[in-house]
Image 1 (tube, one colour):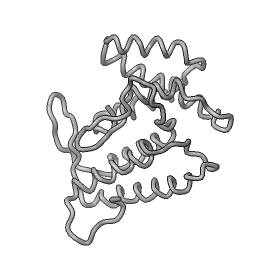
Image 2 (cartoon, rainbow, N blue to C red):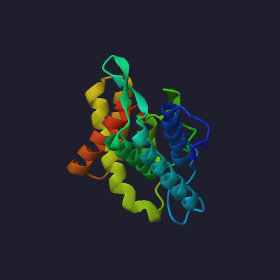
Image 3 (cartoon, rainbow, N blue to C red):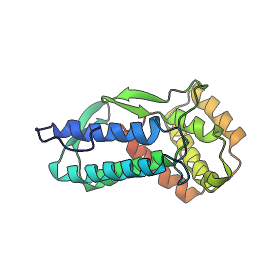
Image 4 (tube, rainbow, N blue to C red):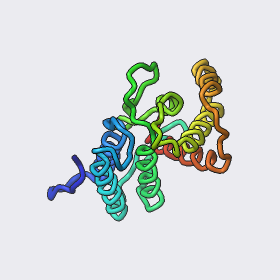
Length: 201
């Protein structure tokens, strides 16, 4: 894993991508359980999150670059404190999401983007709508509702495809709680930034 810096010179851009890729893999893609203290993997996940967060903050002074989508082309953006905090918030977000364990779905869990496998919004939304929450996780219901509503807003703003129609119909059937407008906007703004940085697709 790319948690520790090698004594040999390592490309700083690659090191940044490697830490993000490891975060996506260990905190989300390979996670089979909810991030909950009673989960036997909880401490390992917590330690991984803390180490990755530390690595990202330490990289800020080295000013590595992220390859991002800028309009109709790709461009480089230098890692600064704001972007570092944004990446750490993204890691926290991944830990809150249901584990991506379902194989009975037409939505892709992740796709290759910028030499990283990044989660897809369509899969996250599907899991938010279909994951059966255990009693000890019921307090996350409002969070899941707010995130779902934020993703739907983003889809509505960007497309009118058949896929969007199918997703919207599913949302109508599965969302029973009212979204908190303030939190929906909070998640929407964060998700849009994560999309811009190529952390979601």
